[in-house]
Length: 295
Image (cartoon, one colour):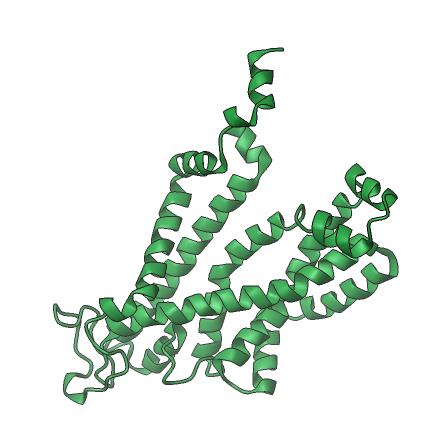
């Protein structure tokens, strides 16, 4: 037996996931940059009460529309509120939006894709045709229609986005499960009398959710952008909720004369979406066997 065979046979000699991740991060600059920026955003959201110099919803007309300065790093808005404080607190809302939309989307889409991929046949056709109905609408048209029907508000906007996005996760999981259900260990489990539900959730799902996790990491930024778009047109977040898209919407009439009122919330959206996309690309490459073998 060669030394390489001995290395592969002995788990103690194989690199741990921690070492693999640290090695990959050190060789992938975009993952390191995206992850670092996103970590700073998370820390800012968590420690917002200790970071901001002013109460974010405090109105002070004597300080309205002040340009950026040492006292107000990003200036103030038309109500005299400190924009830096509001941008930092807006990170909390954006993170909640991303987590909530993806959680609901996966909670709906993953079981549908799991059942469709495992059972196939008429079950697959029925579930996928239902999913295709939601996919037939343009990306933002369906959320706009659902939010308009349910009523404007942040929760309704998040629910509308989740309903319009779950088919993507259903199709991703379905494709993975369809390939896995033909594996020998699935046949062996059936031969031993293991029930379908146990096979689905104990064997098929754990081996097929990696693509869904990667897709979710890449969609996180788009959920924030989509929610900001709904707030911008007036059917998303409502005052006094602090949300970046709403901040831009409330400042659009003053943008030409007081650029900082809309520029900094818009910049926060851009930086967050960019960081999450870089992080998602890095996670996809890290979990892709072809990429790891090429490195």
